[in-house]
Image (cartoon, rainbow, N blue to C red):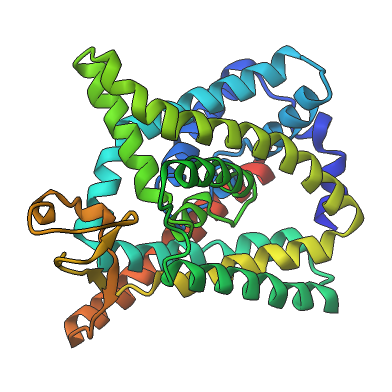
Length: 342
């Protein structure tokens, strides 16, 4: 099975010259950062595409066991640095697209999500057992319930403490998904109600850095970046080790859950929805709007409602979904061909 082979990948798949390792780690990190800005794209899949995923997982395992080899430090340093730069450069643009062109972006997200299915199935190998499909159903149900909770407004923090806890949990969940091929950390942030607040916090810090306004930087730093960062560190370290254990002991069941989460991700991404117009009395972030505060509401904070699409939108949405599938699947195939060539 693929994962038994993966246990022996350290020496034969990771041996490559330092220049190639750095280049591919930087490419993989950049793609991973962009993936975590876009719900539906898996950061793990992007690392597979760059051909650096085995190096990355091995590096995490070594660092968490306090084995500080230069090769592992190079991989993690390049991937993390490139991911952070990608996030800082593109966070604002991605957020605006999601808010102002929701049905188009959600259609793309659905396609990008579904395109990761072959990645997970390939990891399961050719001898797929019954428990793989059973746990796929479990994973699907869990993700569908998470999407339902979000549609009922259960992912929206109503106070400062709730928001800080949500940011920590979002970082924990997002980082956990980030290192799993086929599962999107960005999607988990979206259904938890933390996706746009995190992008807004990053954008606020960028603006504060440009204007050298340290005071303006502190609020998003303390309420968003630090809680998310702590969650990310715990998530990456914890899940990478738990994942290694689970895949060693229960590979088919673990991958089945992963596939179910992936397929269930599309439940919360129905594309034909838009933000509602703010009205007096509407509760936003736990506060009822008044006539005076109507004009101050940010579009990112408004709830959404479904609408009936016209035929052109339906056809366009299907086309965009297919494009998303082709992109993710194509990237995963590119990574697979690189692994074979090496």
